Structures are given as structure tokens and as C-alpha cells.
Amino acid sequence: MNIGQVTNRTAILYHIFYEDHIDAICDELHHVVSETSPLLLFNVCDITPDKKNISEKLSSEFPGCIILFSSNKGKDIGGKLLLLSVYFHLKQPCDYLLLLHDKRSLQALKSSRWKRGLMKIIERQQSQIIFNYFDSHKYCGLIAAKEYIVNGNIKDENSTNTNSEKIIEITERYKIAPPSHQFVAGTMFWVRARPFEDFFTKNDPLEIRKSLEDGNVLDNFSGTFTHSWERLFSWIVTSGGYKIHGI
Amino acid sequence: MLRQAYYNILAETFIEEMNQGRDRLTDIYLNINLNDVQILNEGLFNSLCSRRMLFLFTLSSSILADLGKEQLSWLYCITSLDTYLTNEGARIILLRDRDEHSTIRETRRLDDFFLAQGSKVSLFHFTSFTTADMETQEYDNVSILPANFFEQRKLQEQFYKTVLHARKKKLIIGNIDFDELPKTNDIVDEILKETDDILQLISLNEDNKYERHLMNQRADLYLSFLTISKNIREKEYFELLDWYNHEYEILPTWYKRIGHVIKVIMGKRTFRSLFNDNVKKRKD
Image (tube, rainbow over all chains, first blue to last red; front, top):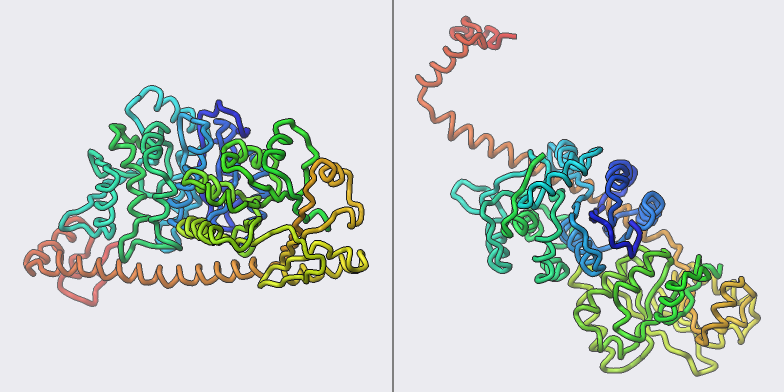
């Protein structure tokens, strides 16, 4: 996990928005960190109160981790794009990336169940199972909690997807053509670094971040680029010929 | 108090210190002078991450002009580190040159890059003062002190007045001859011996007002979530009701009645409830 070390197999990219979640984050990360010795990058949102204590806690619990403070742009997607930018800038290539955030979705009825379900991927000893799966299935590009791998049609008559137009716009602009519309709702998953590298070396993550909305945007009433990119994160992988596996 | 002073150091010197594993830069804050765009790279980033020292950057106008997309990107990433100096959420960058047209154009470029990422940057001019009797300059949240500030008046008294003033103003930028200040510790002396530059910055931004503002903002956010949540549930409720009206209510009466008879056969409804509304419908 030390800076400058080039042998990390995994990089963990964690976006933090809530001020009262730091103890839970440390608890849930400890064993995956000890199991994988990752390059560990955190991004704490600028408007999160008590950031100083959050960063002190993170740096004492995970010595050598990198902590950023950044604007509330594109919610967790914007935070992850900044973390990806730093990760690629550092030139310490890893085999796998683990994308996480302190999901709460206070507006949703099932938010705590949603978060718990997504976090299955970092349960104790899960990392070894995941590495083994990646090693033995070379076309597996992404692993997530299976109940949150959903098939979201972009456009059909009965669809209530508010993001359709924006998704079409982005897929055309970035030439992303996934074989299906399967994606991970919640953007927490293990991903093979290679397809992300292929895409983000051609498309600067900070340039993409510029296009995302400011503030705590929701897509319940109208479409957003932020929520559209939630799908695109999965499709970057599947359009490269890789598959999504659920656990 | 001097622990909160930002000591001026050239970026190359800083990286060299870090590479040689010297620990004299521990526990002090640094004003890192960037005099070459190429220094904005993973070496500087890693050095800053490895020691977790509070820092800020000073740039010259020629550096600003040379900042390409890659370097702007690096500058944004490095100033996003949690150890970078901010004031009310804005990253503070000092500029060494003043009143040059090119500087105005280039600072706008820097501003635009940060704004596009949703971040603010506060740029302050930080020049070497030459006029001996220059007055202290007051801005909204910054005071810039003249070069001979501490020579002019009785040192101790003025220093503590300055500190009090700084608490109100949050930030003081000064061009101070450190020989005139009370002795601090060996580390500071050693750095001063090695670096000719005596430009110093004192930052005293312990004000909690901004933190309180963030807390209030967060309380408003949680309240807005309640409203949004209500609207979303209402929307979901009406969508469900619409679905019911379309998918169930339009069914012919005879079809629905058969459904009730099936419920009785399956033991989910009492037989008597088919003929009398006052009878309990559902079987426990």
C-alpha cells in the first residue's frame, strides 16, 4: 500500500460523502485491505463537514493511503473519475480496481438493504474468491453483487428511464457499444483494470467529470449525465468484449 | 504559533529532501515554489503524499503560461490532496508576479479549469516588497504585510497583535525576515540557512465559521431529502394506482368475481364474505 510500491495487485477507489460514516468505512475496509494490500485512494467531498477528522482517521487507520478533497460534482461518479485520474497519473498499474462509495440514497425506501447487498463484494475472504474467478475466466471483466446487476433498456415504449437521451448521446460520443444493456446499479464493483485503462487513456476522466452535474442530483424526475455514466462504467467493460459476473 | 507558518521552498529542493529521506521537513508547513512546469508529476505527488505535510503552491506567470492540459490536470490533482491549503473550500495559490496582462489571461485559464471541475481557486499575488514604508494591504480575508513589518515596530508586541489580527482575518501573507522573529527551533534554522529565500507565509485559518456553514448546509440537505423522498413516494404511489386502474379495474366484473371465488377455494377468503360486506373477509 506504500506510495511508490509497484507490486499492488489491486487499487481501491473509495468516494466519501457522509460525515458520520467514517467508522463504518474503516471497519468494512480493514479485512479487504489486509487481504489485498492495495493502493488505496479516498476522495472526500468538499462539502462534507468534519473533513479534517475524516482524513486523520483514514491516514491513521490506513497508513500510506492517498486522500483527496474535491467538489461535489457528479456525486460518487465524479469522485471516482477524479480518483481514476489520479490512479492513471500515478503510473502504478494494478490488475484490478475496486470501486466503492458510502452509498446511502436517503430518498430511496430500500437504501440500507441496497448498500448492504452491494457491499457483499468486500466481505471477508471474498477477495481471494474474486481473484480466482478473474484468473480462471479471462473474459470476466467485472464482478458485482448479482442482485444489483440489472438490465436497463435504454429506450422502449414502456420504459420510464429518464436518462435515455443522455445515455444515447454519451454512447455515441464515446463510441461505446455494449452487447447488452446490463449494468451494475450502485457503481460498486471489482473490475479488471485493463478495459478501464484502454478507455480512460483515450478519454481523460477529468474531461468527462466536467460534463457532470453539480450538487446532489437525482434522476427520479429528469435525466442526468451523472446517472447515465453509472451505466457507462459497466458498459466500458462489456463493450470491450468482457462479461459481468454476479456473486 | 510558528508551526502555522508556511516556509518557502523550491519544488526541486523539496523533492531532493524527500528523496534523501531527511526528516527535517517534518511538522512544518510548506509554500512550494514551482518554477518549472515539468516538476508537476508523480514524483512531486508521491513526495507530498508520503510525508502528509500541509502545503500550498506559489507559481510565476511564466509557469502559468507554460501549463499545458497535462500539467493543469496534475495541478488540479495535487491541489486536491487533503493536505493542500484551502480557505472556505477554495484552493489558495500564490502568484509571484503582478500586473502583467499575460498573468491575467493565464490566471483566467487556471480559474476556468478549476471551475469546470466544480472547484474554486483563490489566487493571491505574493511579491517581494521593495518599498520600505509600504502599508499593510487589507483584502476580504487576507492581509499582506510589508517587508519591514517587524522592523518597524517593537517585535514581540507587534507579533502578537498580528496573530490576533490573523485570527479575525484568517490569513496573513507576509514577507518577513525570519532573523527578526523569536527563535523557534533547529529545524527552521537549518532550512533558513540552506535556502536563501526568506519569503514566508503565515496562515492562521483556525476559524470554525466555514465548518459551521458546512454543518448547516448538511442539515438543509437532510431536510431536502425528506421532501424529495415524499415526492418520490407520492410519484411511486400514483404510478402504482395508475397501474391498478389500467391493469385491474378495467377487467370485466364477472372475471373479478371468479377471482374472489378462487380465493375462497384456496382458503384465502371466507365463503360468507362473498354475500355479506359486514363479515370478515380475510382468513387468518
